[in-house]
Length: 238
Image 1 (cartoon, helix red, strand yellow):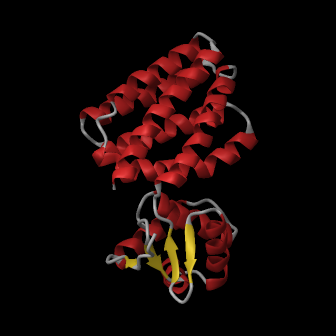
Image 2 (tube, one colour):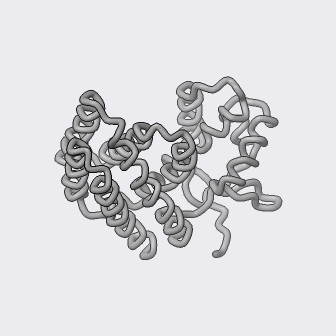
Image 3 (cartoon, rainbow, N blue to C red):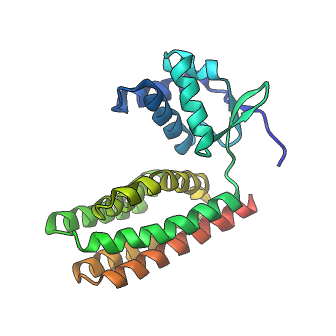
């Protein structure tokens, strides 16, 4: 793929966003704080695929010294979020079908395992929390607020991973789920309205209530696979 040198035309807006994330991130270690801020900006498409930037630009926007920014950028490159362009700084990794397809394969399997494990750890409060999130999704869908719908969808799936009470699984899923969120956001306006996902979420919770962990695992796998195939088809057409 030919490298682009696409640069943001809204530097003040980007700086405002990064500083707002700086306030939100609860992390005292500066390199880790910078890492989380920049990754969140990429995840939320404030830093667009193929967008180029300089280390000094990010340091100035975040009002931080270059050393923690450099450490954060090195880690982001290792984690597959950005790439170094000799003599040009850094560029956000593009959203490529082959990469997202590999991430989907891993995430689908782990989501199924997380849902199976979570089923054994559910109580009434957790059921009500998941059901309330589904209700919110339905509301946002009726209002055609697809960004808010996607945010709640992300919360729903992340909570199930949390409820699995498997820290190693959660660590592996964190980066993959953020990459998938970026892909969903990138394709959201070209997808069919996700009314089917609402039904699938309710079926997953119903199987959890029945304590049928194997059914939950299969429902989650099917749900994730169907949604991921929709995303991959759109990415492939771009």
